[in-house]
Amino acid sequence: MRSVTPPIFASLLVLAGACGGDDDGPGPGTGEDALYDDIYEGSCVAEPLCESFEIESACTCVTAPAVEADFATNRVGCAELPMEADAPRTPVDDYCDASASNGAPSIACMVEGMYRPAGTPMMVTLFGVVDVFGNGGDADGITVEVYEEGPDGSLGAMIGSSTASTASDCSETEIEYDNDMEVGERELGFYSIADVPTETPLVLRTSGMPEFWRDLYTYNFQVLNEDVEEGDAGEGCADMPAGPRHEYRGRILSRSDYTAIPLSAGLTSGIPLGSGGVAGEVHDCTNTRLEFAQVATSPSAEVLTYFNDNPSNPLPDRSRTEGTSLLGLYAALNIPEGPVDVAAVGRTADGEAVSLGWYRANVFPNAVSVVTFRGLRSQQTP
Image 1: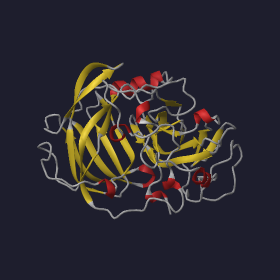
Image 2 (image 1 turned 120 degrees about the vertical axis):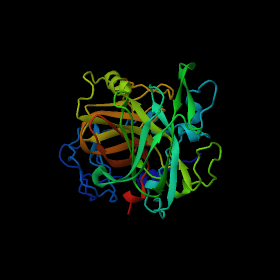
Image 3 (image 1 turned 90 degrees about the vertical axis):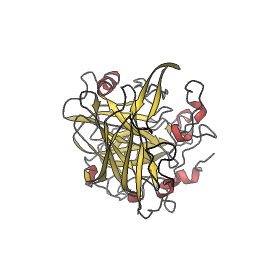
Image 4 (image 1 turned 180 degrees about the vertical axis):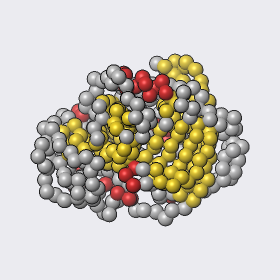
């Protein structure tokens, strides 16, 4: 099992209380001591003023994780996730640990001397299908756009775009389940975008007809050189691009779920026009989902919710206060348009609070920005 020893955890006193990289200590109104680390040198979207039950982390006020050992942040084992039609869960599809459950997060990439090095960018073809989060019809005619990431999460130059098509020989048929019962099928369109740079912070935008879909902006997305594959054109299916290439399964959100998820999370009036949300998962440095992680945003969301344990039907669980479930999934709902700081915090088995990462994204009106934590990226470290 890949894990991090307590001495490495002890070295992760992450994030400056003043959001400027110094160790001046927590400011007025701060609750549990801020997590410190000189590598966080960003300015804050909004200066945090934390309550007694919160931890200041990367310009946010995160609910302090429970101190009980049963709620220590841990890696999610594949065997813990419910199967679909007796098919086991896998690390590739479900970001889970095939060898064990309840292990300590692997966060070595957040320790000085063990940071991920920045690789030399190369051009690859990004390809894959567009999946549907939760409910929705066929993912056909969905536009996938790749942008360079600009300052404060803004969109930089567009790198390329493609329209996902279910008519492609490389499209997929997805079986929909409810309580382990097959309830239908939907088609997932295939897309391909050439000349995408690796080792570069990117933003992916997926969009469709507004009467059916809501835009998703995916942050903290990079194609790492180690994940690039070679191969021949047409390998496996007619529209498969030649290598070097990288497969990425895009996502789109239905308009009905954009309305239903906030309601089930307790946001009775929904997300007002002009505002948006942030959602994603908490993973460790090996891209494995983490259970019992706490997340916060600044500006704060009106409602922050975690989800149930069912990958086939992820729904907000309003009773869940101890952090992420086996899905590692969170959603922060009703955030004003503009830059947003997002941070995640966990707790070791011996009770120490540790940072699980942070990111600066941007909230777009009537859309969701996706921020999944995967440790620290090279542009976030010295």
